[in-house]
Length: 364
Image (cartoon, rainbow, N blue to C red; front, side, top):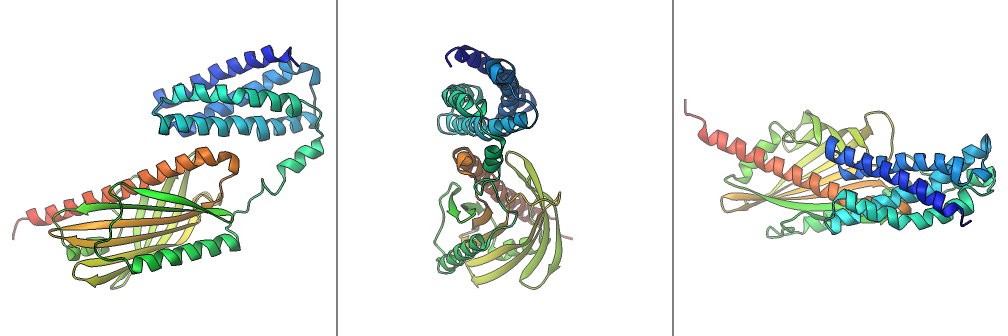
């Protein structure tokens, strides 16, 4: 086995150069976020390394036909998945927690995963495992997942929503979340619930004016996540709205959604609104489970001449595989925080602009 180590390290070094070059090109020249750039760079390096290991490092164990297909599957299920998940996790830790550049964090990530990859490759990937065992692994229940949330997932979501609405119903006018957006990801059977909250202060406006501005036109202010919006129906205290939403994580997914929004006036100083997505479909017709449910709860509290707006957003997505959770958790949290911040900032800018425009409008 020892004679393979120098070859393994040489191939790894070549793949490492390819990976870092791709990462630098995508993040610095093209301007991609580090998460998708890291995933693509690692995927290219994994393909490169497999070819060299097959032809050189373990050339005495070369196989053809179905055996080669099974070997490729084993490599991506184990070594490839370990490289992608490990690199994403350790790169995210270096960037998010320690403030390293993506390049430096990726160097540490590659070094940390090399030993595990060699052992897995020598003992299993380029060993003599049968094709039947490979197929059994790839089709095991741990790898399978349905497109729609199961009954247990829906029941957990409904219970969480009910508990949240009971809590919000009893909240007082002085209740307020933290100044910075914060949230939690809650694991449930077959899925994850994402609960995020934030607050802004809209200056120089009353609740009456704010509600009027929200009801007319009835669509959210222009923002990066909303590609298209229109009102499908309205009543005295509710709206039925169509939104085309885009979500960017490892990949970009566009959704066609419909929402029912209901407004309630509790007192002179307090109003609320509740938005529930009644339809969520991916534009390309697929259902990858990235967004199954979406509820938003808004509170509008008069504070002197200003209105404080509190937002709590609940969403449901499919369960993240265990091997990807360390990296996925950080990415989901960062994206949720940025999305919440953009939504609140866009609302504040739009309301303050509308109020200033009305104030400055010349009398006829």
